[in-house]
Length: 329
Image (cartoon, rainbow, N blue to C red):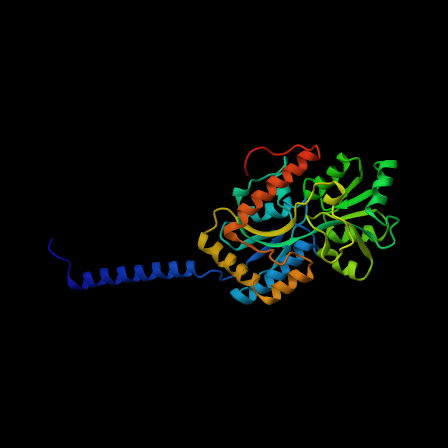
């Protein structure tokens, strides 16, 4: 048989080099991420806190990574519908979610998922929550609410974002202390705000930064702070803990991808978010949102931080007489 003729050997070598070049191009193309739009899913309606934060980071990521980051609102099921939408997609890094809920998704008895189904990209914002009323409300202090709720239980309406989340736990906690309220869920933030301003409900459970415009325009005012310390911008408003209600779990917004996504692609997004968090513009955003100045928790520590918060919320749920989900998440 002998050796191949030079022409055939040369042809084989050329084919080999061509194949190698094609593989190299594929690898290089795979490493170049992102090369097309990255969808940011918000599992809540437009105009709320999660939506605002998502649009803020999308704008920065577009500038930093040179592709578009369209924000898609997918409300429903107290945040479940939007997260399900993200999980139905490919674990390719081209979709991630931003939400203000974690307990309802991965910690409650009815939670569909565990934390290991997601890859946290970072905690973006830590924002104090409270109980608010319309400026012309008959309730001048939280003591007024306590007095009426004890005299006429289940007549005062409180608006929350949905069932199975921290909002409901805290409402049930008040009930366990004799402050029985009628819980009314509205996933769409604008519906909650219109209802409280229109007198269709009495109390609003919300993060202060989400309604800052209403506060600044003196359309709403706080009655109670659900934080470890008093609101720095409302020093005269007591905390729930001061009044004997041991609820202080913070409200956060976090970004997360589907588990199984290439770690290198995760790193591209999470590193960009960490870079954003150190900018003066983002620090100004946190201040404007009435958030904690050191809100940002990078991807490396975000999962552990969320796990600790889940444990704290479960303690509050137990104190409220609610069932909790056993086992580690």
